[in-house]
Image (cartoon, rainbow, N blue to C red):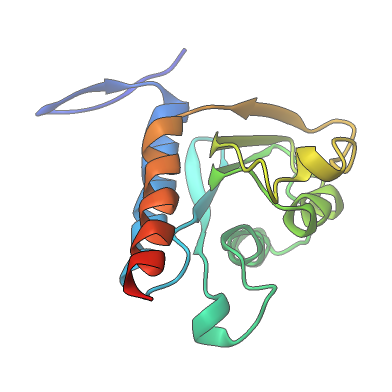
Length: 158
């Protein structure tokens, strides 16, 4: 297994490193008062697409982090298929994003926190491409706390 290390920081496994990058995207969404979900797409150890929720800013219910990252990665590759790529996303994809991942034929999805209310597993666990692998629970506590705290702060303001 390859590990990523920086001089002052302990080495991180690739899943941990790339989920930390997705968390940076989630924090960008938070700074825009968007639901703090972030995503990155990786090919051959390199980030080729990034995204965070922009549904409020773009007034577009489809502007989820995953959709933004899919578009960025497809533009980078010059094609719509994301075979041999991995999506890292801070929260379990919704049905729309899971369905879009099917069409991209992405090889792997890694997510942090489960979404028991709106996650694809609640509605249709078979919506992913048959060859797509799933890993869940990477930085789960940190990913989940970001979203939970966001909604708690919204409720406390009303």
